[in-house]
Image 1 (cartoon, rainbow, N blue to C red):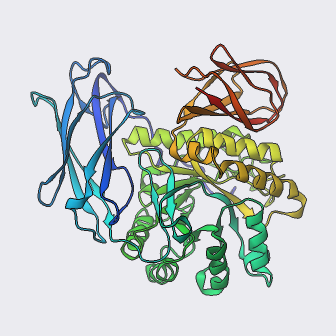
Image 2 (cartoon, rainbow, N blue to C red):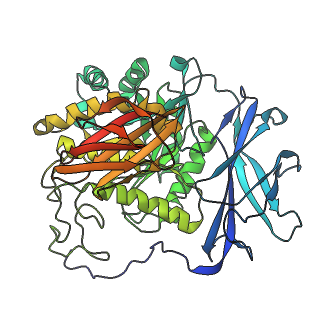
Image 3 (cartoon, one colour):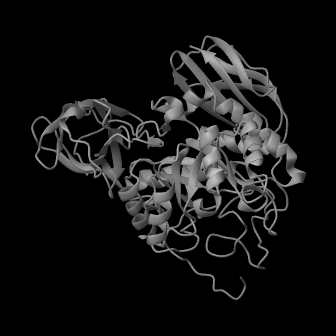
Length: 529
């Protein structure tokens, strides 16, 4: 507001200073955020990237490129007794290159606390060495309700309950935050939940506590509508967190906890999300915890420390990105225009997801799973209009192209004037939550394609001899010239099927080509390799 001073609040994550020679940053994690007693085999994922930043990565004189890199021999041991779980080597290279190593879980006893594991690496002659630790969760079998875990390699969520015969399956959550008013708290709430599910939406974040909506949660279990449980308003009250997590933890459709909403925007204490997440783990280690970030760049490391996965709520459509309703200019230190440091276009979604990944890289952090929270509303004198159906699809597709593994839109029920958003979300959900798209998005790792026109954003995934490509024209003008897309080192043979969009694509000379594309159009196609 006008009466508040304009000052730099600090807390920005900035690129570290570089050095003249490469170092090596080594990180490792268990492949899965949790393992269960019924599993005999586990995996560790190792990243060994070249780094020119002073703040992380250990200097390695003479190291030039990955072709010149020596082998790094390593052990992964149980810290408690030094038993070796993995003994192997890696060759330092790019951040995107992950090494996966199997190990025997049977030597461990299932328990409700994590094991500490130690990673020690050294060159053959021992002139360079490195040590790090991580947590390995090996839990007793869960006798009732669901289990959900994160793939620390590909980023996707895998889920099991009685409906999956207690086998883990890939899950791409796609749905809305569901309000209590006009929805879950109404007399016809069960019929309304069924209608929501019938649209094709497979998940929800109910904005209602178990104490007042048990019947609604039980109905979600009945129809297998996955939900993330809302703890945002109580997460600093640990006694209340304990009570609600205890009450909800054994439901069949629970896949995660919404641990906090915009703690950075509210300037909550840094440890609040950590304390809440740690308590949740003592009661229910079988489901991950999320945190939603509001700010573009404000104490990222501190506010994501208590998150197993991170959500962003970029709402860019219909805003005045330069001057606020409070009578102040919007810039990096002052003003509030409804979307922090946004330009007011669909590319704000991809930019924000890229920002979050960049901060992790600058900080030397293991990349966490990301969700996109689409804007499906208007009002509050921030957002003059809702997105069009085309903008909605484009923003979600840009989210997928930039590593999003779930969609949680604000807010249900959608205003009656925005019926088109209801329909388009349902149509897109039916495509992306079903195979083959689901498995590409959850099991695969997106790579960036190179389009001949800058306004066109391309992501592609390779899985089982097939390639899925998502193409977004992020501009409002029709593109009348030929679009040619290079897909890395892949050499696709032909177009297998078109799953979304009306653009006529073909494969020519190893490239995906089309003679033009409508403004704000999105395509999802599958190619044969």
